[in-house]
Image 1 (cartoon, rainbow, N blue to C red):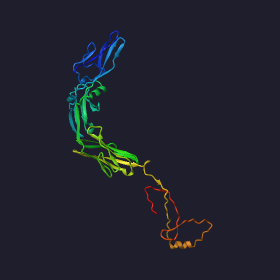
Image 2: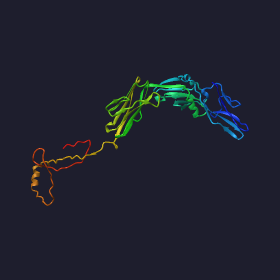
Image 3: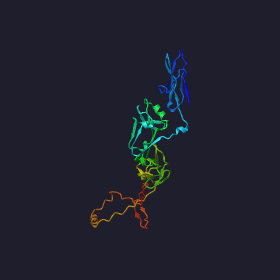
Length: 349
C-alpha cells in the first residue's frame, strides 16, 4: 500500500525542510513541497522519522515519529528455515544462506523476547558443543553502525534460521548443595531439558517418590513450569518445615524416548531458632538411692579398729521415711524432685 508523510514548516523568512530516518537519509526521495511518498510500504521502511528545517537562526527539528509496518497474519506466519543439531554437536550458520550481503560488517543475533541479542561477528557463526540453551531463532544483520533501536526493530521480523537441538534429557540442579535452618521452609529446584519432550519425571526422597503435582511424606512436588530456554522446564520440591531427618540426598529423575537423566541435590540441616529444644516440666521424679556394695572382709576388719567418730563433729543426716511398695518395712531414702527433663527422653525409676 502507498503511504505519504508531510512536513509543514512555518517561518519567516522561509526555511528549507529535510526528512530524516534514524538520523540518516530517508529510504525514498522527498519532494520540494515536504512530502515523503512510499509507493509500496514494507518492513524495510520501519523506523523513526523526523523533519528538520534550516533557517537563518539555526536548525530546528520536529519530534520523532515511529513508523511501524505490519503484514496480514497469513503472511507473518511463514515458517523459518530450520537447522537441526544433536546435543553436544556443532553447526555453522552462514549469512549468505540467509540472504544477507557479506560485503559489510555482519553480525549474528539471537531472538530473546522482543530483542535481538548479539552473539557473534562475521559472516559465519560457529556453534560447538551445543547445549539446549542455545536453541532458538538466529538472524544475520549488516548494520551500518551499532544501533540498539535497529536491532530491536529487526527482532520483529520472522527469524531467518531456527536452530533445533535434539538429544537425551539433561538435568541441571539450580544449587547442588543446600544448608537449611531447622523449622524453616525450603524448595529444591532443578531445570531439565529434553527434545523429544520428557515423558516421565519424579522426585526421589528418603521415603517417598513424588511426581510433579503430588504431595506426601512432608513434601510438596510443585507443578512443572516453563524454563528460560526452548525445550527446558523447571521443577521444585518444597519442604514446608525442615526437620533434622530431612537431611540427605534428593534425586530428580527424568525420562524421554532418547534416554534417562538425573540430578542430585544434597541437603544439610542446621539447628536454628525453630529446632527442637529442652522443655521444662513440673512433674516430680523420684530417685531411690541404691545400697552401697558389700566390702571385702579385709576392709571390714580394718574398719573395726578405727576409733569411733566424735558425735559432736557433725550432725547426722536427715532422712525421710517412705513406705516400701514391696512390704511394710520402711525404707530410708532421700526424696529428690527434678524439674528439668528432655522432651525426647523418658526417665524410668
